Length: 442
Image (cartoon, rainbow, N blue to C red; front, top):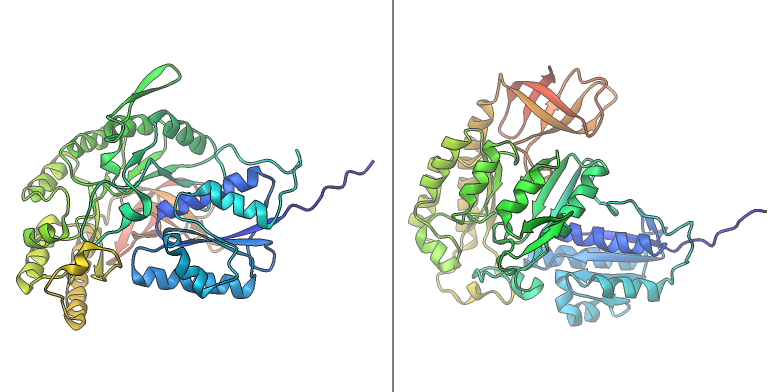
């Protein structure tokens, strides 16, 4: 007897924004796959398309609206979710035929909308998902979200109004997910949250159990446990609270990668006060020097904003001078952009656009020189490299412990035959430029 299965509905996904939104997309797709849905890589093959939007900046909103418009034009059966979902009326006014609009983290509402638009076909032969769920990243690295929301009220940010206050996951749940990811091939765990170093504050650092072991909801305890899983562990979105010093200790033990992503945003005390930034500590430079004394190879990545309301030329020069002292390895810079609903919109001293542009170019020139010098110091060394891509001509590219995917540089290899994606290879660094390293397997 031949068994004929009904065709499973197919779902397409467009995921915009930050890695936190990417994790949301993975959770939605994992649930839909568990319900028996198939996935489509293009509009034409999809019965329904989900657009996970970003709504933080006006430019991000415009990109999200363009993506919705493209999905509507190419497919027509579209569900919108994510941060822009809080502007549902505006989305529906522009796209009246949209099927549904939900806000961020509303996974159940998204899945319900898909089920309504394209009812699932239940079958024991179709309802299969990997142990670690479905991923939108390569098999060899994974984002691990440990909390949602944020308790800070920075003047330029509307994240708390979009995603709510800090809501930490129990440590046992995080570790179970991490173990499944490593078991299924992840060589690198990228730990993310809106404020990673605040993890567990809302839980009062409560203790949960995993396999009979007590686990405290604290970033130091969690990081130590993650470091014992055998994968690279990289921390993103760390605020420089005092207990970050304990994380440096874990790096010196080899449990964490020597890498911190700290969104400093500025250095001028005047601008930081206007931004309402947490951990506005005049001793940050001293702490950076202390960290590097303990972990000399520590790589620091950050983001900065120029042209914030009230920023003077003296404030900007303070930032440039601070960069020279801090020696940040990698830095992104953004020209200040007003965000609807942000407190900064009411601040006096708007900086003209041409001044923002000039300061952005000056910042990037200064930072590029620092990055180039710090990369040049790695020439002649042997570094472990996680391979992200290989080609047919014996070349390969990957990342060292000092580089996160998508946002940092790469290590480009020659004479790399026999190497596969996901391998960790020892590489002798032969050359560098302002962004990347070049070498050969040892």
